Amino acid sequence: MGITLGVAALIVVLSVLNGFFDFVRDMLVSFDPHVRIVSLEEKGFDSPDSLIALSITHAQVASASAYVEGKAMLLHQGAGDINKVVIVRGVDASFLGNENDGGVAASTTLGSFSVDKVDGRPGIVLGRRLGERLLLSPAGGTAAASKVALLSAPAIERMYTQVLSGSPYRQFEVRGLFQLEAVFDESHAFIDIGEAQRLFSLGQKVSGVELRLHDLEQASEVKAWLEERLDTAKFEVVTWYDLQKPLYDVMKLEKFGASLVLLLIVIVAAFNIVGSLTMIVIEKRRDVGALRAMGVSQKKIRQIFLSVGLLIGLVGSGWGVGLGLAISFLQKKFELVPLPDADSFLISAYPVSISGWDVFLVGTIALVMCVSAAIYPATRAAAIEPAEAIKMDG
Image (cartoon, rainbow, N blue to C red; front, side):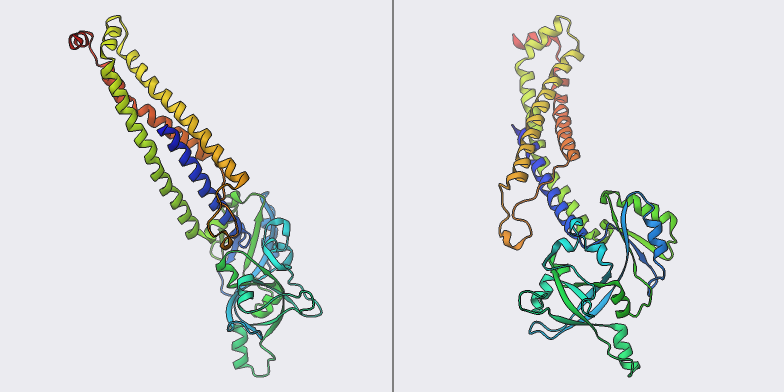
C-alpha cells in the first residue's frame, strides 16, 4: 500500500505540473513564435525575403514572416488612465491572424484581429487589460471604435529637430482586444508591419523573422540548422523556450522539487520492506537452515527473498501506476478538482498532461527501490548456517 500510494501520488502530481507547463507554454506560444531570428544590428536589416526563403526550406517550418518591434507612447482621448508606453509589434496579419493556429487571433475576445487599413485608417489590436484600463474598445453596436495614436522615439526626435516635418503621431483605430497573460495584455499592441516601419522610421528594414513550426518540440533542431547557415555575428536564433527561459526553468525546478518530496513516500515504504523482510528472516531461520541442510545453495536462498521484494515492487508499482493514471484521466475528462477562485484564471480546473516517460520513470524507480530494499534481508538469510539455525532453535 505504501508503494501504491507513493507511485500514484507521484504520477498525479507530475501530470498536474505537466498540465500547468503545457498550459502556460501554449498560452505564451500564442504570442511568441516557435523560433525567432533576431537582427543584432540596432536598426534591423533589409530584404528579409531571402531569410524567409531559407527558413521555409526546412521541413519543420510551416510559415515564416518578418516583424518589427519597438516601444512607443500610446496616446488616447478616453477617460481612462494616463498615456502609457507599450511594446508595439508590427506583423503580417496573416501570420498571427489565423484563429485555427491558436495564435493571438484565437485569444482576441473582443472585436477581431485586424490591422489592415479600413477607410484610410490602419487598425491596432491591444491587450484586453490595457484596453479596459484606458477605456478603449473596438466598434460594436452603435458605438464607434476608439481612436488612439502612437508616438515613437524617432518621431519625438523629428518633432524637435525638424519643425516642418509634419505630424509626429500615427493614428490608429482599435479593432480588437486580446486576452493572454497579464504581462502581455497590459503592455503589448499589434499593428501592420508597414505601419510599424513608418512609425519607427526603419524604411524597408525589419527587426527579424518569426517562424511557426509543425511541431514546436523540434524548435531546438531548427535553431541548430539555422545557426549553421546564418552569420551569427549578424543574427541570433532563439526558440520559444529561450524567449521565456526563466519562467520555464522555474516550472521545471518546481516539478523536480515536488518529485523529490513525494519520492519520500516510496523511500519510507522501501524501509518498511527492509524491516518486514528482516523479521521474516528471523522468524524463518529454522526453515532456512533446513533448506540449506537439504542442499539449497546460498544463491537460491538469496533469490527467494529478492523475489519477495520484486513481487512487492511489481504489485505496488502496478497498482500505483493504475491508480495514478485513473485519477489523472478522471481529472482530465471530468475536471473533478476545480481551481480555487477560478474566475481569476483562464482555466476552471487543475490541468492534466500525462507523460509516458514520467509514468515509466516513476514505476521503474519504485520497482528498483523495492528490489534494493530486499538485498540486505536476502544477504542475511543466505548467510545462515544449518548447524547454527538448529542450535538456536533448540
